[in-house]
Image (cartoon, rainbow, N blue to C red; front, side):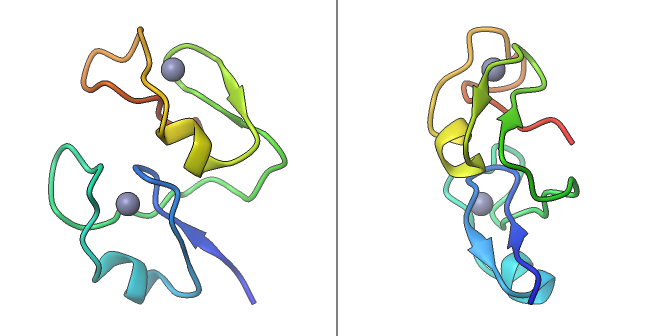
Length: 77
Ligand SMILES: [Zn+2]
Ligand SMILES: [Zn+2]
């Protein structure tokens, strides 16, 4: 079974449908989780600063000094 992750908070769901129907506390643009469209990896890189984390969850919980739109790291695809 595939896992789907929210690109803003890293929360994991078993379907895109359930992911997008729950609200996300870290989405700066809206209220719902949004699908991370990259593949599952052993390391995730922030697209703004290049810092690496072992999960989207930990990546998105740290603030990024180079992100112009928000305060947290965002995963590169
Ligand atoms: Zn989320
Ligand atoms: Zn960053």
